[in-house]
Figure (cartoon, one colour):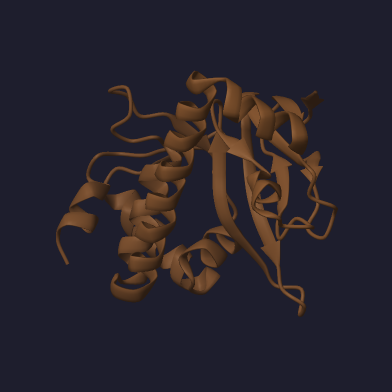
Length: 192
């Protein structure tokens, strides 16, 4: 299936009976509290799965998945995915590697919330969004609103604005609606 920018792949509360595999594009995972507060809990790209909670008995989606770029996504119904995981060792290994990687990311995010400053969490998020250190290149990323960054970091938009201005002095560039992340942000993560 093809999804346009800002088109939902699934919504929080929808029945969870399909696993999705992202062939192309990027997808953002958000959760909305009962009070209407939205938090970004993940960004996924080509080669990632989503909706896998249905395989563990999750009856409804606990989050919303929305395309942030044009995306090509494969829908695999729960029964087919379960069968293919048993019958195809290559897919089973790919899926297991994805789950382990995602689990490590969730643990790192939790440790960051518990032990790191807001500034350090923001620097880490920007580096992750830009795929810093993967495949030897840094990508530019579309500008992300300060409200979304604040929700992801766990602070206020005003603090995000303060840190973004500070990072700009370290070489974070903002041009034509995109961010280019500079390696100087690593200094924020490495040094307290």
